[in-house]
Length: 177
Image (cartoon, rainbow, N blue to C red):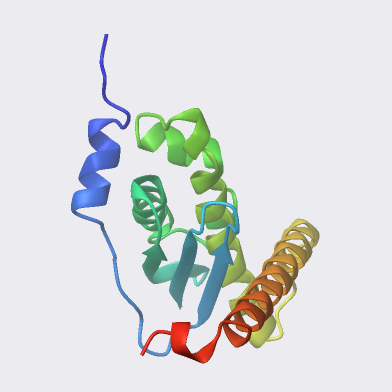
């Protein structure tokens, strides 16, 4: 019986992430996060055209602040989306990411969802900036993600307000100098 939590594929993407970094002047940016685990993912895309004049993801990079699984899923989704048409990229799902990594622990499957959501948001951002038609399912996904981000922002604001209140009630001689 193996005591490994992560597969060798996960560890390879974690130790040597593919396409890590920012794209200067990206065509689309996707930002997602998970308040429970604290992971935050950014995916940046550049869109170009292939031989058939269809829009493709010409370049893709990511920045992820999170755990081993979050970094690995971010890395692998950039590999899967690179060179794909926007429609093909939107079809990449969590099971394809998980399979490409040789599996994830059940408690880490949400990282594959975050990666899919970050890519979807980058594509949505590109389409909306360029006043292009947004597929209905992408619009629904964007609305769900935005609702979740609003909840995260609200909770974060409540947390920082509580922190300020606590710090303001600490006697001055007890505050850190």
